[in-house]
Amino acid sequence: MDRQQIIAVIFTVLMVGSMVAWGATLI
Image 1 (tube, helix red, strand yellow):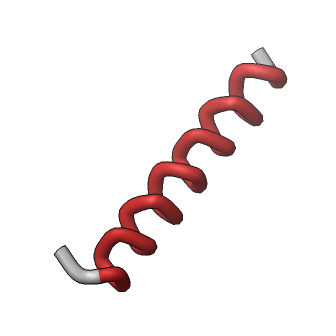
Image 2 (tube, helix red, strand yellow; image 1 turned 90 degrees about the horizontal axis):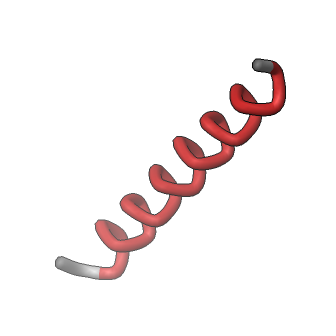
């Protein structure tokens, strides 16, 4: 894996994690 792929994976994890956390606060 090169740096761009690693950054993309980290960004995706952060996006999904923030969406899950935001959804959990609404429930």
